[in-house]
Length: 300
Ligand code: GDP
Image 1 (spheres, rainbow, N blue to C red):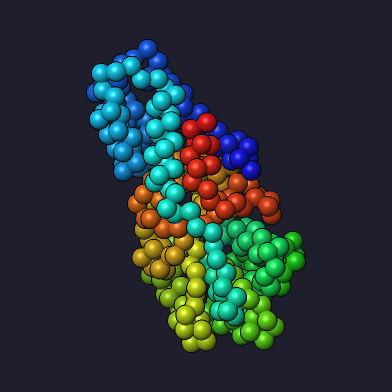
Image 2 (cartoon, helix red, strand yellow):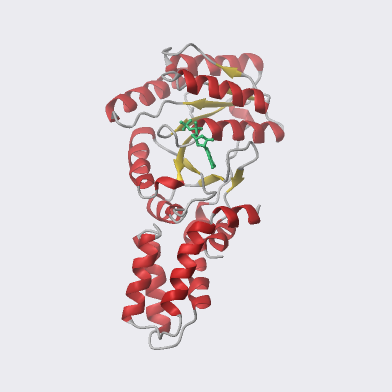
């Protein structure tokens, strides 16, 4: 896995590490090099908090001294790991919820359906009985795609025709899970963020209707974010935390992007648990988030 993440983040880490090397080769640490470093870290989407932390530490500890690129990278890795370590949190299914209801939100294309398929496979392998609900009822393709993932993961999928009421489908999914004894329900949702009030109405209605059957549900609301959109992930997270009461994050497409640094900015800003990261399109390409591994891959 570490190899996979290192390979996946190689475009981000190449940008960061060659940048650091360029700045710190044959140079003393002074305000100019610190400013160059600050620009580099910001352009790699690390966010202002973690960037200031790295720059501040170097300024306090090392100004006027020779500093090697390796030392700077080590400090960078440490700051990234320290920022994200409190957010490492595997998704915990509580079977006594009977069923544990997980609502999955995010804009179209972020990777919701794919992530649900991967999660279903993982949870099934852990011994759970999983039901999927194809709640993105606005797009026929999304319904079909979830059905395909259900086959791949070998778990049942509750679908309704295109245009059906998503809240009603979610309600039925919970009823079905109770009747058939599934302990987890993963609910896909529509993600048209261009119309914020419509999205808010839709997600709000799903939650209201779910609560009629299961007042504590949804037990988790996962926001799926695509790493390749860089800074846009921040505005998506702002919108969805406000609209949907997000309880945790999954970041997809960390394979092959130069924008993996955005996870650091997100973690720093929102302090939401980062449950999983997506590192490919395959069923096994969902990994529990490990801050240390991520930090090493980012600075490798
Ligand atoms: P949704 O609209 O949010 O449900 O997004 P989809 O699940 O349909 O995913 C959109 C595209 O992103 C699909 O082509 C997926 O194969 C791809 N995708 C999802 N997760 C990952 C990932 O971790 N890595 C890569 N490379 N592609 C991914």
